[in-house]
Length: 233
Image 1 (cartoon, one colour):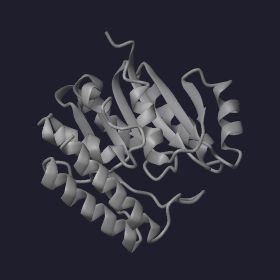
Image 2 (cartoon, one colour):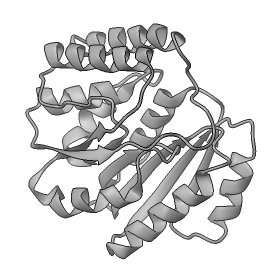
Image 3 (cartoon, helix red, strand yellow):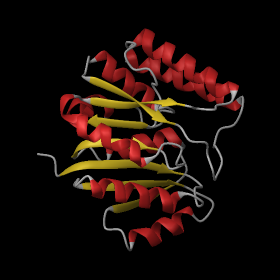
């Protein structure tokens, strides 16, 4: 039996300018939906005041948990969050940059009973050329090796029924650069019931991206190689 309805996994790195409003927004939204939930934030070795802010918030927010860890990168942090919180009936992952907003979540939650994997398709997204290229290649690779039902394969706005993903997720290597590509692939490969919703992408207002410009392409090829290897493990 699952001990709680929903756990939100939020990786956090140097988001002192937005993290308070992000946590408040998600807490208010989930409370309004009458969900038994926990927000699990994983501070990935932030160098600014992010951890201090989170530690202050946890004192006044009973739904918030804060985990501090050495910096290992966005993907490994997400995967750690998944593996350590499979006791919930549902897992939801979202980033801490406030580019995807909590108000979009209601349609996911109210539709969940008919599906195993619900994922956002980011629209109105103004991305630099390297990110557009990596997004396109990621979709093609996942589509070719796993199946092509999921459109935005790396979208950080995804609701997963844990019982359908547990065995496979626990096998993903901890250092995987982009585990969400593999998770999307798992949903395709296992022919799970998938639902996709358009979600509005908002431009980043604070902080900065951790991987910039053409360095992103190098990281993308690494993640794609890992995604292919996992398919034939």
